[in-house]
Image 1 (cartoon, each protein chain N blue to C red):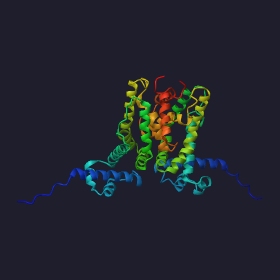
Image 2 (cartoon, each protein chain N blue to C red):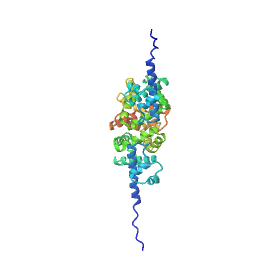
Image 3 (cartoon, rainbow over the protein chains, first blue to last red):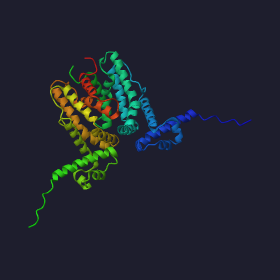
Image 4 (cartoon, one colour):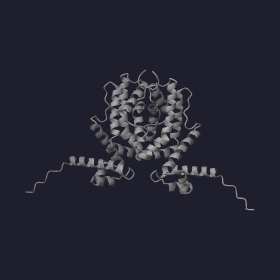
Length: 206
Length: 206
């Protein structure tokens, strides 16, 4: 009778562990050596996996990094006690957007998130193809959550029906993004609360 | 009798020519090789001047580049038929800001301006000291023009007195900056006109 084979290693758990090691290696490298010098070989070496393991799951370093970022955002949201990819709808638009922006302020001040985000954003500025992929993959899905929440507010009569939600949402996120990216001003809860109030009520007297 | 010496070369005209060659070389290099690999030596070689000529006027490559940018902005404004560093005050805030933003749209679409601006902004994302210098030297003076125009509008009753102009101005410039830097959407006169209308009148029904 042949010897019984040992139980197959739990390949899904092993895969999950490799996947996480690859994400961590990719994010660390992009901070340390920059995007142009980050390579699949370097990620594999640092993660302690074979190059082929990476190529089995992803077709390029941009793919690895974009997925590592999506995972990082989801993790940051979970740690903040939030559902990733959801903006609450309590029926009070101002309160809901203020809460989400306060969580974003915390995230932007977290170096685990901030350093790789800056490194990727920097490369996206000079590498247009990467910049457009970041916009489509990392940013647009979040922006659509704001657009959806604004559409709900239009149905509830909290936002004027003639407003284009895709433009209006930029009042909530672009000023914060610019202060963070370009150091044009400090970031705080008070600041993001003020953005929401100004955006909803306008600058002109009512 | 000694031979008469030829007239002294016009040293201020020669200086102006060298200065312009140095600016052009600095902007070209930052596009071609990136900020980290741009050196005083490289700028001098490309401009056809001695290294000491550069050190006589500037103390670092960051100084040369920031001044080259200020000159580039001023040139772009002059070519657009505008006074650099002025926002008109015709008594109609919406019209004045729309006009300035339309000129900015043209400038952002001009590759002579766009490529070096992107290269410098990218480096400012990962080099915090440079980022803060760009913010203070290149951006803050322009932002203050918007703040001044908003203060005049407050005195004229066009903007609510409780509004902080330094925050409010970001509704005009940050969405446009983010679309341009991060490719999150197209840029047009219609878009910037819409930003001005939404910012002044607010998203909520009146």
